[in-house]
Image (cartoon, rainbow over all chains, first blue to last red; front, side, top):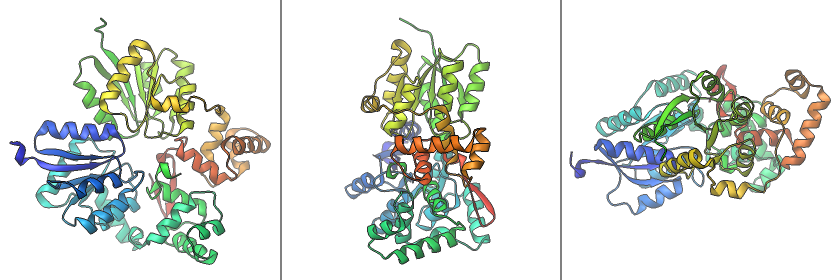
Length: 219
Length: 221
């Protein structure tokens, strides 16, 4: 396999050990070549803007500082609709999986997988344009069955509200930060509780953390 | 020159990270991964049964069942000769300070490359210590929590009342109030939600510890 034939890959993951090992493993095989290594979404899109050649597939983590995986995914689809994305995250919940796929990811891989599985997923995406797995199928099935595709129904403002739920700010203070009235803030809270089947603000906060809407650095 | 292989125990909740580290270290004959587990409980059990014991343990903080703090306490009490290097995505000063105070020989964060990990392993093996920037930054943070406070923090994210937590911890409800107030003061927070968030942020609670019900099905992370 000559170097020209290697499929160019970008990685965005805030863990250097992960970036290094993916890059080492892939370059050892010859089929893929990592041309961009970024520590967060912001870093990634800055490099994509000047990339030559463009990567064919981007491996994207969700819980990252500066610009998380959801925000990055939206940005990528808007600016480079042909760039294929494989989400790679420690999150395994319905929200994360369904939301990334709805935003346009070509596949979703949990960090409970190993490097062989990653390579398989990349090959699949290269050859067929998508990668499916038991994890994806079961979550998709569940979200259809409950007829509550939660991930798609949360607006950007509600996402922002969820981030504020993970603070000690009062409803009044959250409303002020978001330049809305307290009653609008309360309506966000009620709508989200309703959609997510939760009852308290603490429940919303936990949901926001466990679905990667809020990263550890944001807390 | 010491040619003996360095025996390493790996404890990290993410298989992807364990696989990444073990594949890279395996290419160097000086290293041998003898234990490879997903949480502190398995780690302590496997090390106690291993002969000979590993030289160095590469430990994560956010682990379900038995987190990094509890694991450090257990290692300190049962396996004092084991050298621990923490490798974690958490870079909060509280975490770094606490793990070093509990006996960690080095603390490596997200920016640690494979090259630096390699260097840290050799350095801790030969010189017992590997200083990092994160450790230098956290050095003067004075506050550390006691074991009861760590345990109480593990319950704060649940819907349990203070009396229920007291029951679980076998202490009086007054003692719980006392932990709470002391934590409020130490951590500069004012609500139980603030304590729950702190517990997340610092890996006292791992994502895998939290179950949240939705639409009748239990979602765990």
